[in-house]
Every structure is written in C-alpha cells, then in structure tokens.
Length: 165
Image (tube, rainbow, N blue to C red):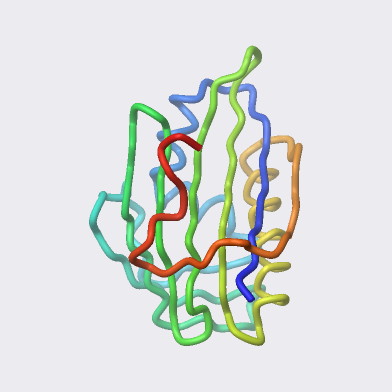
C-alpha cells in the first residue's frame, strides 16, 4: 500500500532564496552528505523535463542503484517542484516540494507518496528521517513530520497534486 511522507520545516530565509536551494542538486548533496552519497548526480540546477540517474549509498552500507529522478515540474510562481523517482526496489517516489513565505521567513514542505512493495514501511521511515535530516542540515526547524497511508492511487502518469492544493 502506498504511503505518504510529510515533513515541513521553517527557515529564517526568504522563500525565493530557499527555492533556489531546492532546485540545486549541489545543495541536496551537501545537505545529505553525512547520511548518503549520490554517485553520478550532477552538482547543477535541476531542469524541468530532465531525467537524472544516480547510484545512492545510504549510511555507507545500503546501495540504491540506477535510481531515476524525473523532474516533472518547476514552478517559480508557486515555488513548487514535482519529481517522480524510482528504481528496482522503489516502484514510485512521487515528490512534491513547495516553499511558502511566512511572516518570519519561509516554510519548506516535502510531501512524498511512495510505493516500494513489501519494503514500503522501511523506505517510508527512512524517507521521513532523510527529509528531517536535510532540513536540519540546512538550518531549518522541523515543524511537522508524519507518515500515513496514501488514499490516492498514484502512477508516474498521474500528477500527485492539483494546482488548487
């Protein structure tokens, strides 16, 4: 059964400066360097419509080879990025990232619906841990962290969220 992972963090920076970080694979690599290594992932800015392939080593032990990241949408108006990711173990990792301005900075929200078959509970817990770690490494204060069953059937062809959300 697909699982939803939700992690939100508050930052003192502006939403626009955080969005620049969100689009950068170099920032992703730096924010997770203590828990994972992304072999072959370029330290460049994401491009809408592009697919990237990486081999990930998690905690120096677990390998996640031929991991595909397809960037479906980068919206500078709504400060939103949507990716669909997968490999042989992770059937679907549909990631919706949005940054919202607040009175004292910005709120960065990561929402993922994932399906890894029998491994889904383990992968979901790791995903929650990883997003929490990323936010703390960037200097964000995690304000929300949750796992829940996904009530939506998701496929790579179906968008995760509608613009009204």
